[in-house]
Image 1 (tube, rainbow, N blue to C red):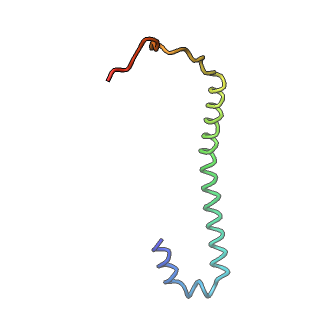
Image 2 (spheres, rainbow, N blue to C red):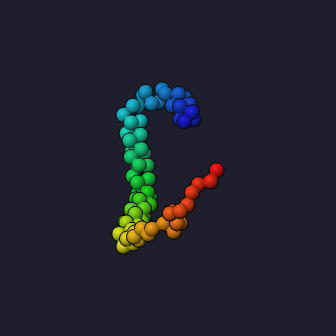
Image 3 (cartoon, one colour):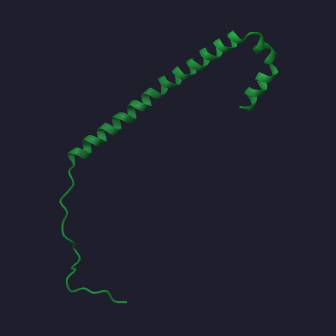
Length: 81
């Protein structure tokens, strides 16, 4: 980030002389970078959404088993210090 600040300070006269051109290029390159990033991340997002949907379907198919009674006999036991 410091490099960007140094670049703008070194070229401040050029930016101030042509603010419309600077703003235009900033919007074009910023928007282009956003669109390219969104395009490349769209596949990853779609993969994650399909994995979530598949997991939800598997959870619906596998109903939880009925809870069984305790395997440890409770009657007649006592705690000893």
